[in-house]
Image (cartoon, rainbow over all chains, first blue to last red; front, side, top):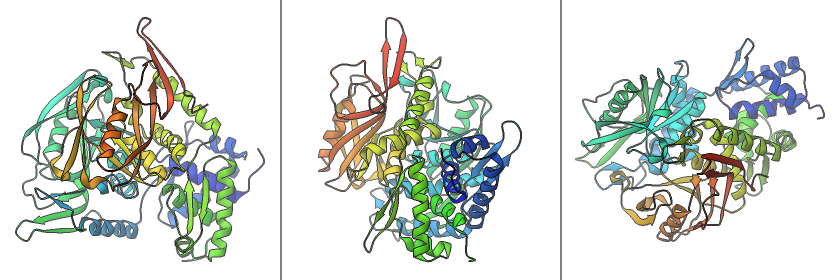
Amino acid sequence: MEKLSRNNRVVAITKILIETPNKVIGLNRFSELLNAAKSTISEDIVIVREVLEKLEMGSIETISGAAGGIKFIPSMGKQAREEFANELCEALLEEGRIVPGNFVYLTDIMYNPQIVSKAGVILASHFQNMNIDYIVTVETKGIPLAYEVAKSLGIELVIIRKDNKITEGPTVTINYVSGTSGRIQQMALAKKCMKPSSKCVFIDDFLRGGGTAEGIKDLLKEFDSELVGTGVLVDNVGIENKRTSDYISIIDLEYNNEEEKLNVRPSAFIN
Amino acid sequence: MEKLSRNNRVVAITKILIETPNKVIGLNRFSELLNAAKSTISEDIVIVREVLEKLEMGSIETISGAAGGIKFIPSMGKQAREEFANELCEALLEEGRIVPGNFVYLTDIMYNPQIVSKAGVILASHFQNMNIDYIVTVETKGIPLAYEVAKSLGIELVIIRKDNKITEGPTVTINYVSGTSGRIQQMALAKKCMKPSSKCVFIDDFLRGGGTAEGIKDLLKEFDSELVGTGVLVDNVGIENKRTSDYISIIDLEYNNEEEKLNVRPSAFIN
């Protein structure tokens, strides 16, 4: 291939880095793709790093050694996080969001890639330096968000099922008490899904009583693994005596039953 | 903010475009963020476009008019698609992938962001010019892939549930015959999930008999909407008389019961 100019090369390097967050990419790969010496690529990377950091769009880490290279660490500046959380609050206050039973309808938000991808970067940044092995979630509504957090951290997603699936092989099942319904429910995870001694983070759309997080803790014990943190989009702070305390959220929400009014604000983690 | 150089600006423009595929971004946004004239930004965009197209990493479309701007259209070159499909074939032939009942274990593949994001771009490119309103899937295993296709096309995801959820408000439920189990199953979709007269594409992990696609067609009729295409990661081509024919896949798979052997190859759509 013909030689590319610097401003051509930095475009390609940026694209590849952004698409594979938290994955180490050897300089050889850039060198071959862009037909340039590794020393030239190193200079290009300095430029990409400076711009991303200046605009608070993330950072680039250098990993030395034989398996070395660079990796992109997504993050969002304080102002962008606050703007995002405020927009989310506005969306939550839209008319028609309270459905019969006084549940908050979150489905459209949780399935909107523009929202979920940003929320994923915000939550992932909290767990960046914890050497997490898997992001876990329970089907269904939190899956896209959990997926984005996993992608952002460069790790795999594990989805816990509410029933046993014939297509997944031998499965471990536990019972837990759901915070939403107060009923005993099941969680099932295929044995093949997780290596033992894994550190996991639970991601979900909404936190009520924290019963699901407790259930996941128990299920992970069966895999000799550990739940080391929890992140949700929305925390129902109106519920007292939660069974879990070790979590972060983006939005704090309270529903005032008497006034039939929803109160929402960015969480302490955002501010 | 201080003025940035051209090779600084193209990094920022690339980052923003890649992260919001198929969304129109006004030149004003770049102009303000990068403290540069719109004419300068236009020149920057020419560079970004040329590099992406030269390296077969996607294209940039210009939308004129008051609400105009540019949008990034993800795509993957023929060689990269073939390499990806071949790697996927190798992964499918790994030992231990056939679980009791002769099912192919796909969970690790379907929950791996590195694989799913590429597969999403490949499938999305087929539906790029069809003015799709929603990507639909049925919980659970196809959700990350469906999410990536929706993100790539700049549209929302709709997840059909297997049972009625109390947190989603009024719901339409239908019965259908599942290709996996041969049993009658349910599909449910909240009324708030979809605007009427929508054009939808169904994305899933695995296509067997096509019963699910037929069920979705029926369910969408209840929303005055239409299924205009289907895309899956893996097509079980060993099953005859499928109930759907209008679909694309990335991998064709056949399981030889007598030899207990899996045959896989990139589909006609890839080659």
